[in-house]
Length: 394
Image (cartoon, rainbow, N blue to C red):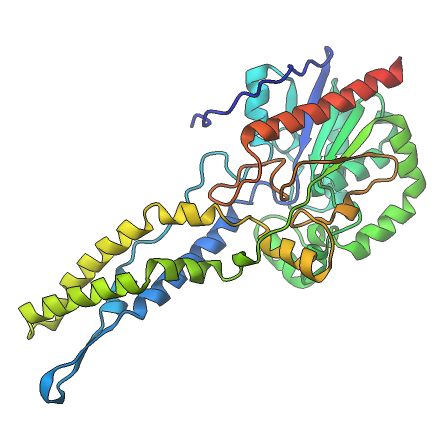
């Protein structure tokens, strides 16, 4: 499969020295984010079916011979399933950057591809060991670009391999890293995490590692070692924040109601009455003919309405609302801004956006950034770390 065309940004090319490359380290379950779309697909389809079942038509006849036509049940059973249109490469961390780097001839590796042991659904300890093993085996100098939990994996790896810092690893860009933990992880149930993640090839410890009760003691216990690490290589800790609209609550039901509105109800009722008058003794034909006509109307309304509606909600709007409104913490939907603070690292506030914005496309959900903006930000962060590396050696 050929990747979709990408936007080329009008920026100065990123030129690394001979023997240097970028190493991408993905975040928690970054290969499985596609599954997030399935949940909303199911919710939308269930809401459409519930709305359709409310369309059963009651016909008033003389002499108290009223009749109910179960057209709603028939429509619900015959509705076409709504599938969310996810483009190739959608929901894949660093996909656009890798395609752009390919076009620009920028040397890079993705740890998920080049390291068999590395698993974004595994624990920090496991992945740190996988990263250290890769760094020990490569003959390149690398600038690491990590996202989310991948930054925790990276931090633990570098703390455990100080001899590689400044020699193999010459710089690090940590994007939206929950160094001090995430309230979203805090709200999850440990035994359930293990059960679900083991079914996907991971383990529950990967979620436990994101909790504040785990991260805060870790950061305190390693404070001196972190400060020493920051003194040896330039590190940028980048973050973004945004505020979701409260309108995301009940989206599926609202969307279904917009399809099955009063106008559609009136049209379908008229269709049922017309078919009944043609063959009043053949109720099965009335239901069948009316259902076919109703489905055509629903298809017409669905075409184009879903993409437009989906583009108004963000992938992590619900958790963003929780942290903004309940906890009063500026955040990107999964990680509070304060959690991205790494003592000794250079903080970098990115443009308004959610947790996915700097690393992936999430169509048909709302994309806060374009692919071009994402590529440009990645390049500029790497360029700044590379410049600081040069300055430090002069």
